[in-house]
Image (cartoon, rainbow, N blue to C red; front, side):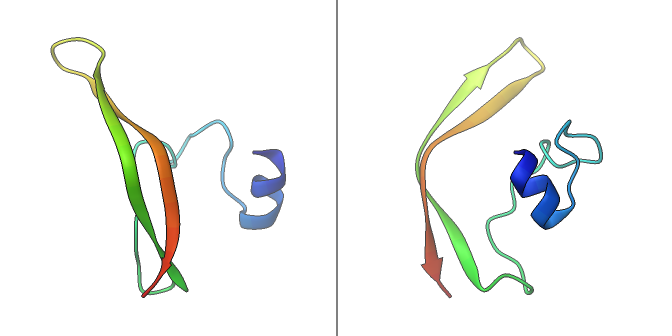
Amino acid sequence: MVELNKRFKFNIAGEGGEFESLVLDGPIFKKRVVVQESEIKEEDENTARMVVKKAKLADK
């Protein structure tokens, strides 16, 4: 995470929405992210999280 922080300038503490969102593709991306395996884990009645277990990069 520290190396990614140095390279991409994002907050490794997750402040600013880095960990609340999952972006799979965008106009500035050279490739897109394909989620191959995931799981939804319910924290309580109002909160859940998606755990990406397997993903790959794919050409656009």
